[in-house]
Length: 85
Image (cartoon, rainbow, N blue to C red):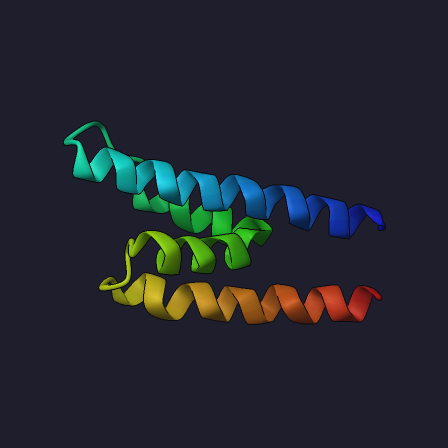
């Protein structure tokens, strides 16, 4: 594994866990993680983790910027990863 693959693995795990944490906080009426932070994690390479978190936790699936933005970011990062191979 090269540096980019290790980075992407790590950021996606962090992003997935963060989406789960925000869903937990939403259900339990606690302070939330900002949408800006959630999208920033996806933009930083965690788009796969974000999309997986959206599906698994059924979180942010009604928000247009997440429904469209996260898959677009996933495509961009996928192209960067393929181009780096």
